[in-house]
Every structure is written in C-alpha cells, then in structure tokens.
Length: 418
Image (cartoon, rainbow, N blue to C red; front, side):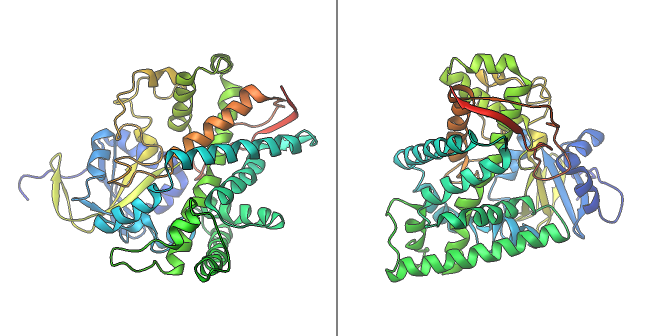
C-alpha cells in the first residue's frame, strides 16, 4: 500500500533463540534500538510483530483488530494455559466465560479468600518457627496451593498437597523452557487435569458435595451459550486457571520480601500500615519486578496503525515488562518508588503487569484482584506479625529466566511472632 511505511524489522530467518536468551528484555531492547514501539521479527518459524507502550496496549486490546484463538504456541497451551481455556476465546464466547470467572470475585468471595490466606499464614508461621532456615519461595508456593484449593472448593488430602504444589508450579515454571523441564510441565498438567476431571465428574454425579459459592461448583454447573454444560476437560482447565495463578502469587510474595530487604526506608513507611501507601507499594512491586514478559494475539483483519500495516493472521506480542518500564509513561522507571502511584492516571493500558484492558469486557486478568488481596495479607505478616533475619545470599534475579525468581528463593531464619 502506498500510504504505509516499512516497519522496522529484525534481520535474520528466526529469532526464537534470541527471545529465549534475552527473556523479559527481548522486545524492550529492540524497541530501544529501533527507537520504535513496533517492529517486525520472526518467531517460531513465522512472521511476528512486537509492540509496546501505552498506545500499543490500547491497540492490542481492541477486539475488532486482534483475536486470541490459536495465538498461544502449543508448548504454552500444553503447560501454562491448557486447551479450550478462557485465554483462547474471543467475542461473546469470551465474555460469557469471563462472567463465569467474575462471578466468584464478589466482595464475599474475596473476603473468604482473605480469611483463608490469613489462616494459612498462621499455620505456616507455626511451622517456620520450628525450622532452622526457611526457603520462602518453596514454602509460600505450598501455602498458596492450600489457599487455592480451599478457596476453589477442591477437596485435597494433606498428603497430596506437596505433589499438587509441585505440579501446579511446574505449569508456570516450564512454559518458557525446552527439554526435560518443559516435559515435566506437560506431564504435570496432564496429571492435574485428569485428577480434577475425575473430581468434576463426581460433583456432577452427586458423589462429592462442594459449597455453592466455590469455583469448583460454579464451573462444574456452568452452561455455555447454547445452554449445555461445559465438557469435563474444559471445566478442569478452567479450575486449574484458578489454582495455578494463585500458586504463582508466590513469585510476587518473594519479590515483596526482596523489596523490604533492599529498601529499608520503604519498609519503615509500611510499618505504619497506611492503607494508601500499602496499595502503592503492592502496585510498585508488580510494576518493578518481572512477572509476565508479554502476551500474544493474532491480527484479526488488515489494518494500519501509525503508518504500519498489520496483516490478518500475523502473530503479535505485547511487551508487558517493557511497558511497565517505559520512560514515556513512568518517571525514572528503573527506580523502585511506590510514591509514583500517588499520581498515577489509573489507565488500564499504562500499568499492565498481568495484562491490560477491561476486566469484564476484555482480556485483563480476572485474577488481578485475587493477587492484590493475597499480597496485602502477605505484606502484613512480613511487616507486622513476624520477625525474621535475612542471612547473606544471592537475592539477584534473572531477566532471562521466565518466570524470574530470586536466585536464593529468599532464605529467612529465626522466625518468631511479634
């Protein structure tokens, strides 16, 4: 087309290995080198467009221009998302399924989640007091697994908790890996889907009773737009879409501990437990530290944006990490500063640690509220309810490994109640 510009592009046949080598910074580095919020590359054997920044995020969540169906690579589907889950739906089908998720995010549902989280912190503290050292990431993953299955209404025996924690963790820890670790993630998903499917069948057959206000009950009896119950496999995937992200909050809790250790002046402010500052701190942890690197969609129909042509069927990646560290949006983005959220414009496209857009109509993560409430409870315990020591260790974290976790997994010791 004569009215379009040549999109900045990365030379070479395929850059999938570069993405794996550079991780969170792959798109961000090229946005800076091209001095452009859009560029073309080749990933997984096909042409791909990478975009970042506030305007790009607003574009990406325009459902007239992009679709999610068939966007995620199979290796991600087989580990992180599962088949036929909400992440792969578009239009009215997505809206209908999203309503199923949002139905459990009521004030009563979130209050129940908070109470369960507090109880599990109490149990964990009693356990940790007896331990010489605590590897926080591993312990909190198990704690979050207990929170997840209790809140979701999934019956789990005590001797099954460790295995379930390992399997749910493997799903998000293996999605961006290759080789044996990736296959561990695939096998873990297959095991959990099979087990959850058996539980769902028992619920539907009346052999297992679960509270009506739980995800397991809601999802088991949810009907699609034609009035049919979802098939067992799809329900299992969606129940895991509740369990797995809650376990993944362990990553953010680890980074809370890192921030408290690295920024004592911030910790001092938090000790007053000013609700507004607590909220700003939680948001800054989610902005500053790496979590999701990017999200993926496919161009739905030809269109032109900023003079560049987007062709139907083109894989498109939105830079989440880079947008949260964009100098055009954030002042001194590489500094940890909770106060920046005092004047934040509250745009759903400038701050996107778990995706952007609208909760109800778009693809913004329905679990974002869950994440924030669990982080608040966890911060309260780390600040106001326990004392502990942080021995010398490697608290640095990789910008290549996805997800990124502090190398030491945060070791603490001499835990005691305040």
